[in-house]
Length: 254
Length: 254
Image 1 (cartoon, rainbow over the protein chains, first blue to last red):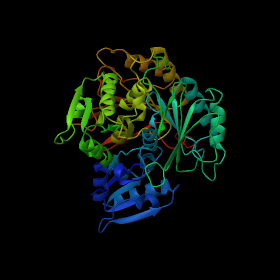
Image 2: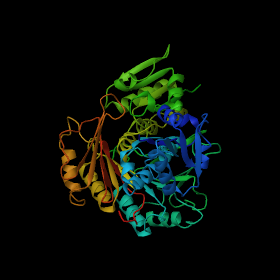
Image 3: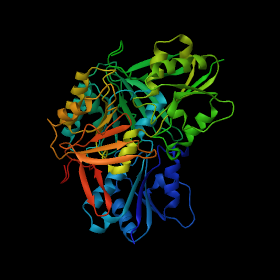
Image 4: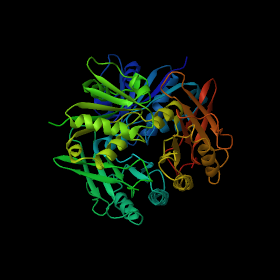
């Protein structure tokens, strides 16, 4: 008998973003594994066991879930946003890759979700409307010079850039250093969007420019989008501005 | 009186990917605008008018929807996947930016959805588990040399690459040319994933290598993911292989 591991994306937080597939996968599990605040967003099922762990304990959580699944239990590993974007799906795959053979026989299912950059982009217009990239600013898992090289390449080649994990208590300076780096390639007027806790109570989205972008307002719950030279802002009377990147790099706006 | 425009992402196709927020936005609209096959996937509401248009008619569809909204109608513009990723949200913003002042007074809401790269990645493991980018291979809207520059930059800097719009009848050679270009930077063994019609009946996901990647199996319904040098394949007995990119660029796998 082998169990099942579902790695389930719950989206930005509110139940209105939870897909029917994700809701069904959560309801069908015997045991849930996840960061405490994510588990708190999920409806309780009778008889279902919850294993809470800290943010940052991804690898230990993946191993614990796989051990339970190998014992024949149906487990769900809960991920904020999409599990495949800087989240639990890679952690579970890493554990399987370096784990016992029996873990390769498990039924592994990844259930996609709305990742933060899509939720933030939707709140402000269409900043990701043309070629874009996603970069994690966490240098816990890669050297800072690798991050700098990717920022350089993305800005120089005209990608819009979504920055995940921009700031934490242990990483206070990285976002400012990233903005400094991007100013080498992008004009001061380049639109920058800060989205904080989007899709949850008290969320907040602000638009600024690369010249004026503050580094003190972001935290672990913030997603930052830096436009390309093609990204535009539409000012609107009595409405929030719209930020978008045209689909065409040939038109008048390119 | 001003109307409302909701630009709604329905995800890859099947209702199990439709978020409650998207379902509510579709149900609340007086009129739906969209590519015919997308409209066919949506539950019919009594009294709701449907305006079908061809794929490729994005700008005319956006203008028609905004004209109706300016007349006080609540309209929904239906987008496959996520409306912000190579889709209708940018088309609507472009129309507003170059349209009459009254369009800037409309209530504009973008409802995010599961975009194709997230659905394909979920089916195969976690290929987007580390820094990645999304590039449209359509050169209808940008010069081919711009696409080449972005492929070069992304591969050289270590991004995993999701290719949208890889092939169409009018663009038969671009995917092959992109693979040729990427072979300058990436080893022959680099994993490549083809996902066709993922989330719809008859969907299909295959894993190959950059050396062996065919250019004849992709079509307009295909999303291609090209790994980085860090991307790994886990062979599994009696199960499909898992493809993932480790979260760490520092570990043994980097």
